[in-house]
Image (cartoon, rainbow, N blue to C red):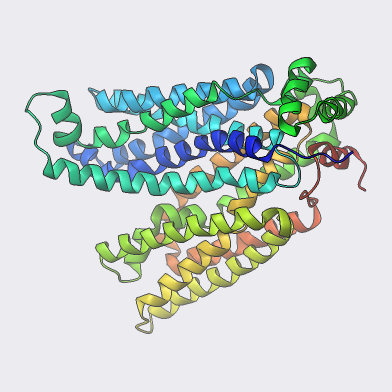
Length: 468
């Protein structure tokens, strides 16, 4: 029987879950516009500044560690709701924090929301999406992250302009938040998308695959019927998930002891952490500093960084449309090959600039090329692969483990990049990023199957031993 999914409804559910990606991007990027103001107000030294910027990562690691187990036990929807609550508490708390300690506490709470949503949102999308467009729909989450970055930059800019033009009555809360200490408004504005996320989540169903695994087949069938606009198709999908789930009776942690199941979990950890050491976060976080080392002024460096952000968004949109047609692995082969070439040329540029006076336009072109190849490959593919390559019974736990690796990699790159730039120089730093591309390529080539066009149950069969 031919199944015709209700594409508009499925896209709606995916867009709702992808709002979590916007919050991820906003919460991560908004900090950049507040550092100088917060440092001045609380008299922060360099160490305290680093703690202010990086404290959310601690919350992210805690959030990602808990998200898988919570989502397997209580459901994907409930954990997304919890993340929306954490984002809201963080935004409101940061806006009214009376001390630096309070500010840090609320930033950590927001970080926990980031960690949770980074696991559960793409997982939810993968479990409601049909195989034909699953890659594109999960990529909506990555696109939302990039839009969140731009949204934070634009919000910071507009609020700063507002603070300089509007006059508020002195001594009022509005004056404090939107004029005297505008960093509070920058951090607090996150409550608008966070509350919107919470409210809309109330009107979407739980993941049908989670419902099946947790013996709620009647509810699961109703969701599948809505997704596929067919009672027969709904029953068939429930039976398909049940058949696959009944092959294993062990709990999630017991399944991890099975070498067959452990293999994709370890591979997911490997690509999650290696992807961070291929330079993308170093470019996004430290781009202005790197551009300044290329001889640009501070203003030009920020302008170049905005162009990097725009290319990141536009390329992610392109990836969204082609990831299911081209396939995950072909995109990685193309993109990582381009990353290797552009990273080598960036390294040569910095090496040559010490000898020759090379025009700065060259470094902009190379950086934009690097971001293009990154956004169309590893950035677009990582959340898609992690959300679909694990058996349903262990998907939440396995994604938490992979997400934990990703955040550890992010932390290490954030901490080590300044050391690399100082001790290896920009040329040596980008040469190191180049070398990290090769093990990533090898793992995707030899160890991970193409998942485009395959149902989650077919992918599970592959890992359980049926390599056909």
